[in-house]
Image (cartoon, rainbow, N blue to C red; front, side):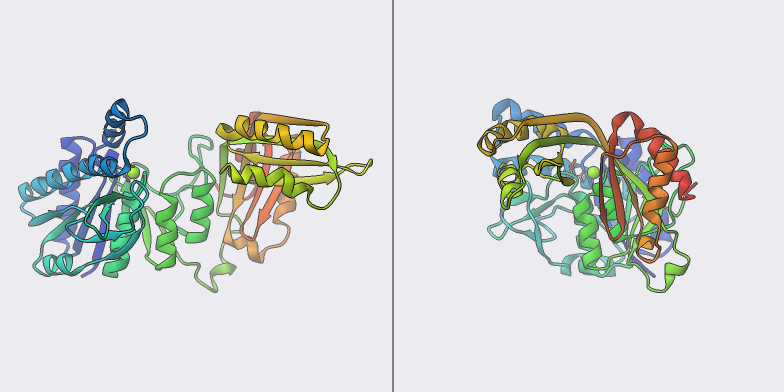
Length: 405
Ligand code: ASP
Ligand code: MG
């Protein structure tokens, strides 16, 4: 008899019919003998609707009241799901985050979980009940309701699974797993049976949005086996686990191709080639809370420097205006920006033990006449910045170059 935490996202509980469908699935799993803790999100669109209401009154809503407001979305779903479960003949009990004592810090709207009191859940489980917990919310030490940030129900599920030492944390969603790349771009993208936490983080942060990044980090830290699977389609989904040693012989070199369209490039041309210049250019960007991704610096024949880096598209204008002053101070020739770029990455823990991965990648791109503008690497990833018009072509080319279909 296993202990499972199952999380159902907003689209899985978006209507009464879907809530009934989820209740049916839960009833079936319960009949199989598993102990079950169910975490649900708000019905799809609900958190956005509540946010819009608040903004009509306060453009910058008071964060304490915002949490009181947003937490109602999940409270609706836990009650409805328990009712549906009772109709299925399953004994179930619903709890808000504060009732199960998901204790968080005080950071309203982006709180972090500090401790979970699992006594109540354990005694319900021992009595054969299914425990239904509201995702995305907790309570701080003073008893105020907090929320965990958008997409936070995934984190609730992983945290409960860690606290209860569950056998698996299953995230039910509207896709049936994690794919080698986006199936909308490559028709023969394949569902992965397994992927490591590290790879999943790279895939997620690079734009294959299936799971909240924080939830994956949390699961990795506490070694909670995570599975992504579909609410609407039977199947094993994708298991996200630790990198098992000795498996590298069979491991494919590259597990997936990730990409991001939200990229823009800024170049500061003709700055002096001297100590401290990179810091003068990049520090004010960091101070303005703009995240910098890929950085390239190259020295021209006349001993002047060009510094180029990428930021998210929404930050590029702000970054450019900050740099105008710095550029004037450094006597730079020009600050130029380019919005029409994308980042494409190959990801795989298997890269650690294989040489020649980069050359395979660059050769494949060259064979299609795709120019690489910038390159960055880590142990398990190689990313290139290219013209946005080559996004689909490059992803398809790399997908087949690494035999992922
Ligand atoms: N309802 C919250 C949101 O929409 C939390 C979640 O769905 O995970 O962000
Ligand atoms: Mg969600």
